[in-house]
Amino acid sequence: MISGIFQFFFPLAAACYLLSVLAFLFRRQEIHYFFLLIGFFLHTLFQLSRGLFLGTWLPNSIFDGTYFLPWSMAFIGLGMRWFSNDEKNKAVIHSMIIPICLFSLLALVFPKGIIPPDPKTETIFVALYYSVDTIAQACFILGAWFAIFHLKGKDADRVFNSFLIWGFIFYSISQVVGAYWAYLGWATPIHWSTKHLQSASIWCYYAAVLHLRYFPTWNSKHEARFSLAGFFLLLIFNYSTQISLMSFPRIGG
Image (cartoon, rainbow, N blue to C red; front, side, top):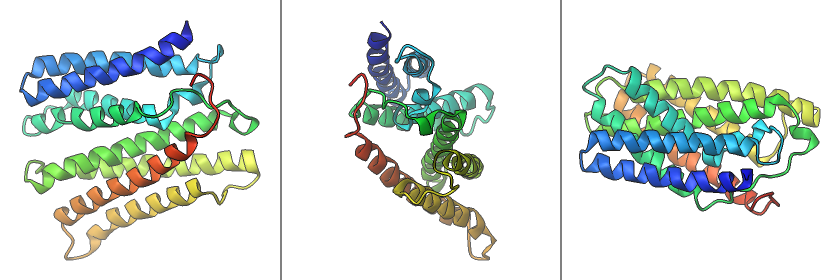
């Protein structure tokens, strides 16, 4: 029963996100919002079902970045719709459904099975690391999305910069949590793997972007362009890791 639910909800959620994009493009805002909510509800059920897939509660599976990334973006997007009173950026906020849908459709090509747990993952810090790390990536990606509108003159409030700052905060927390997990699992806070080097590269990149504003000739247009470049850095690093994990044996396909 759990296996059937596990396989069924995410494609439905992705379909709803796609319908929401179509409604947004045709300026049918009520229909767009309806399908966004339905998609998010189904997506949430899918994430929860991953935690119960093995017949016992396993939170690590919920935070698989392939599926948790678009969920995090949808959660942030809905939060901005509910709590933002900024009429100037309303259309830009609604447009967030486009990257949500794109990353959901991209996730459909990856296996939905769960990599069996091992002794090194039997700690709450694994779930904490992956959840915070993925939320940070969601902020960076949405920051890049808003940077496009800033370059077009439609984001005068520099909302993209707020996403970069929050993304950097969450990513810094994830690095500390990840170091502690590495100490518990490998007896060292630094494990010189490809994943760790990629994480360090991303942290250094966004630290540089946020601090370059102190240069006299630096402006928000420069920061927006670097935010877009950071998106491609994340895309390459994140999905190169996901592709390498496709060969791992999984339970559930």
